[in-house]
Each structure stands twice: as structure tokens, then as C-alpha cells.
Length: 571
Image (cartoon, rainbow, N blue to C red; front, top):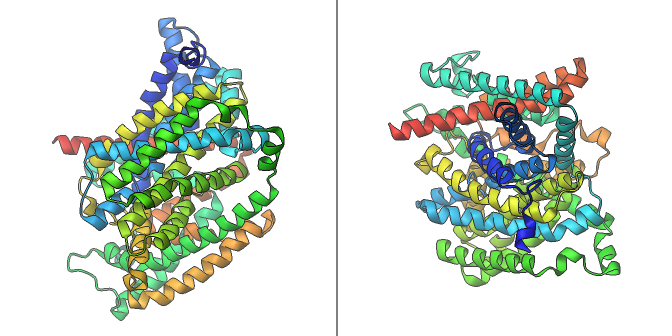
């Protein structure tokens, strides 16, 4: 049976190896961007283009066997699985744990933890696939975008060549600017010295410009709004009133964000939960997948013994590591797994409808749940919630890949094998990249490494452990007000017609702007505005190349930043 999984036209050694190498290249990019701005990039399309480019060149220069469409799908599945290892929360609960406990996990235990959480998500996706893809007929927008690109580059070779050229040029420009900044410390333009102290500046970062082009104008405007509220209106009042004391070394951002993160986190959490619960209720009310499965009997995939054994093994390893690494009581550790399975299923349903993985909301639901189950235990709160968030992220990534594979008749079992290879290499490379970039966790939640997801998870864990006593007294009113606003907008996002929804500010983006420097929000807004202008003036080129340009900018700067960190360690 195992031998039948491997095929020279699909799960070939070169397809898996290509995916492993591309995944090893792209994983540090998402670690870098996650620690910088709290967001990551879906690497499926970028991985497709890189694999196609490599084997097209090999065919011309070395006369190698033509690169097959299904091999390309396996390669991107492996690479995207590696890059999505960020959902194992190397940029959120793990560094938050280090800040709260004062202890950093060694590399080997950290790799084992990240792998186990992601491995659990793979087998959740296996059991959800018949319901959500086969019977549910959900679109999975990110998977469909990957499928369309896959079909396009194999049908029109010239289109692939154009996209690869654009990708290469964008990556080279972003890497060049990053190197110039590292060598010469390029100036940050700011309207005045006073505004500069409140982090209003233009960052010389094409990565931020690329992310801005992806997020859309609504989110870009929301980031700008949040920056103006947080650092333009609230922060000056905090300084003038003495509510925030600026340290002698002039670290304005660090001092301000200790206060601002509370209303920002409250806005993010309350809006995410309100929208998530409303979406989940609507999704399950509208879904007849479960009833259909009962009428037809269990899907064939559910009756296979190997996936059941793999899910059981993933469950056992997850429970054991929770107890062994974080001293979580076995009863609570056991509870984390069914909680993860339930929330991963809900998140997958939302991803299938909207294309947006609600991983942040999943984490907050988990933290609130375990705040009730294990009150006063911040570390338990963090790491049990990590199981649900990490499993949900890897589950969503695989379901998108399975949706793309279904469009070309790919084997789901072979994609599962590819995903396992990707998770393994992503766990190893991701941990090494994280440790290279952040040798000391005290570097985090700073102007250099804002790490907004770390700040959010840490703040929620502290609140769950200590109650509102963890919040500065003068920030509590702002926190309650932000929470009420977040719930209102979150419910409106979930229930309002699409024509109205686009006029609502994104509460998650507004809240995020409270915990990152205003300069980051400004440049991302500029990127969103440029992408919107391009879409209006040249719709077809914008549709074909916006994501490609953005991918190149993100990859180029991230890789340059990671290489610089490695060189610094070596020196």
C-alpha cells in the first residue's frame, strides 16, 4: 500500500525534494514577517512559480524529464506546508511563553512541539475533506487561486515566464533595499522631530509595501486610522498627562505600547470573537454536510485504519508534550485535543467560505476556554490554546491545497504525505530561523521587532491569569470601550450585506495598529493604495501580477533580513 503512494508523475522524489528546498527557503520569510507585522503570506503560488522556473531551466539546460502538473502540485503542497508552520505559533505563544516564564525552550523540544501541533492539524484536515470539499462543495478561495495559477502556467508557458521575471525583479529590488538599509542605515523621513518620536515616519521597506498590496484598501485605511488614533491622538495625551513615563534612553514606542496594547488587544479579541461566533453559527446552520454523511454512511476515507492510527498518534504526542514541556496537568492536556479538533473544524468551514483563516480568533477562543478550565495559570492558558491555533492553521493550509489538487485529479493521500514532509522541514527550519532572528526574547515588543501577535497572546494570558488587575488602572476604561466597539463592528461584519461591509473599518487592523509603530501602518497603507490604483487603471495586469509582485517583495526583504541575522551570529 505504501509503495502505491509514490509515483513518478505525482509524488516523485524530485517533486518532494523540490518542495522541501523551496519550503526551507520560504519558511524564514513568514517567521520574519510574522515577528515584524503579525501577518504571514500564503506561499502556494510563489512555490508554484519557483518550482516551475527551476525545472523549466533544468529541462532546457540538462534535458531532464518534463516537469508535470501533478508534480508541481505536490511541490507547492510541501513548500506551503513548511511556510505555514508559522501557525504552530513560533511568532505568538512560544515567544510569549518565553517572556512570561523567563525560559526559552531548547531547539529540539521546540521543533518537536511545533511539529506535533501541526501534525495534528493534518489529520483533522483528512477527516474534514469529504465533508467540506467532496460533499460540502466549498470554494476555498485561496485553493482556487492556486489551481487557476497552476492551470495557467502549464497552459501558457509565456505567462509563467512573465510572472517569474516580475517575481525575480521584485525580490531583487526588495533585497537590495534591505541590504542598503543594513549597510548605510537609510533615513526615515518624518514630518517633524516630535512626530518622529511618536513613530510617524516612512520606512524604507518594500516588504511592507508588498503586504499592503495584498491586504486591500479597506484594511490599509483601517491601519492608517488605527495609527492616527493610537499614536496621533491617544499617545500624546498619555505623555502630556504623565500616564506613560518615557524612559531616559528615549524608547518611546516600548513605553507607549505597554499602555496602548490593552485597548488594541481588546478591540482585536472582541471583534474577532463576535465575528467568528456569528460566522460559525451561520455556517453550521447552512451546512447539510453532516446530515448528508449520515444518510450515505461514513465516507470511505473515514474507514481507513492508517489515518485513524496517525490521528491517535498525533493526539498522544500532543498530550505528552504538553505535560512534559510545560507541566500542564494531563486532564487539561487531554481536554486541549478535542477542543482543537472542534475549533479546527469551525475554522476550516470559515476558510472554505471566505478564504480568511480565523487563526487569531481560534487562539482567543481557546485562551478564554482554558482561562475557565484552568484559572490563574498563564502558561497553561498559552500552550493549550497553541494546540488549537496551530492545528487549525495547518488544517486550513492543507484543505486549500487539497481543493487545488482536486481540480487536476491529484491524489489526496499523496498530498497528505507531501504535507507531512513539509511540516517536518518547516518545523526544523522555522525554529532555527526564529532562534537566529530572536536570540533573546527580550528583543520582542520593540520598535525593531513589534511582534504584535506575541503582545496579544501574552496580554490575554496575563488577563486570564490575573484578571483586570493585569491592566493599568487608567487603561481599563479604554479597554472596555474598545471591546464594545469591537463587538459591534464584529457582528456587523458577519451580518451586513457585502455592499455595506466594505465601508466598515476592519477592527482587527485598527487594533493591530495600536501595537505596531505608526511607520509600519503608513507604508502598508501606501501599498494598499497603490494596488487599488493599479486595479482601477489597469485591471488585467493588476489581476495577473499584483500577487506576484507582492510575493517577490516579501520574499526578497525577508530572505535578506534572515541572511543578515545569520551572518551577524556567525560574526
